[in-house]
Image 1 (cartoon, helix red, strand yellow):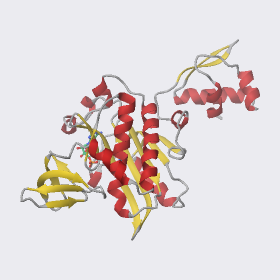
Image 2 (tube, rainbow, N blue to C red; image 1 turned 45 degrees about the horizontal axis):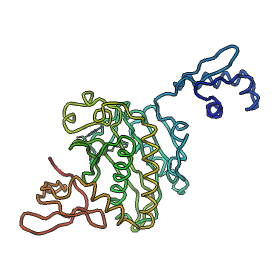
Image 3 (tube, rainbow, N blue to C red; image 1 turned 90 degrees about the horizontal axis):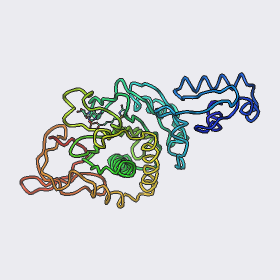
Image 4 (cartoon, protein in one colour; image 1 turned 60 degrees about the horizontal axis):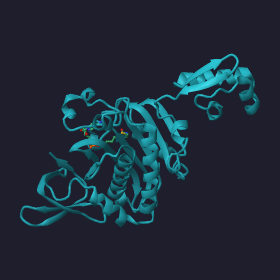
Length: 321
Ligand code: BT5
């Protein structure tokens, strides 16, 4: 009901409680109660005895009704679970994916304003204060489990495109899951999935975007390698707009991926790559390999030309500084 009232409350124009009550078929007291609810969520609403209610401003929160207002996707983000704080949106999304493995939640989002135990890969921590965008997307693609790297890279391409469209900032993809601006990490992606031998049961893509964050508030050890959109552009970005743009881009690329049309996504991924052409060291778990990043192949794997001239395929790893 609060959402219905929001639809009629036009910014800086008054509408009376009586009219709202009539349109919605509820009492004026019920209207008043819903207005209080909206105020508690952070909407600034004034009331004038003669003119009625007026929406002065919307809260800077990633509330479902704010994201869905003007969201032009078919199914990504049509359902959103929103939390002021969670341990990790991926953990919550995985619980939901497990519970509802009927594939009806395709494109459902879990969003939190803050995470108290945000996760990176391999048990690493992801710092997630207020001002960022921390979300997970639940998907049930009919793809092979080997698509995991392609899913992550597809997400990275959508992020780069959305950042460019909303802020004009050029960013780059550091294989396999980072988005960088001027060598510093601005987004991280954590793709988790449950699989059977040759099929994916569900995928949860966790996306962290340092949007309106002051990097000086980060723990000291990650400050020098991190940045935020606010820091880069010198002004706050509209998180709602950025998220809407990303969701639209993501859906477009995900549709291609589902049709097994990764080649065109790969082309963009290579174009935006921060990794290709560089001499790097990659930690692949059991050892560190040195070489030149010469390609990313059709499976999303990194091709590294070692110092002895041999080229090897790396499916997952972390590029070291
Ligand atoms: C990642 O891991 O980059 C994946 C991050 C995914 C975060 C999202 S937020 C929503 C969803 N829910 C979650 O719980 N997670 C996902 P990795 O490549 O392992 O990088 C982790 C490393 O990045 C850490 O060890 C730090 O060095 C650094 N780091 C931590 N927080 C950061 C931040 N906010 N910005 C930049 N770097 C950060």
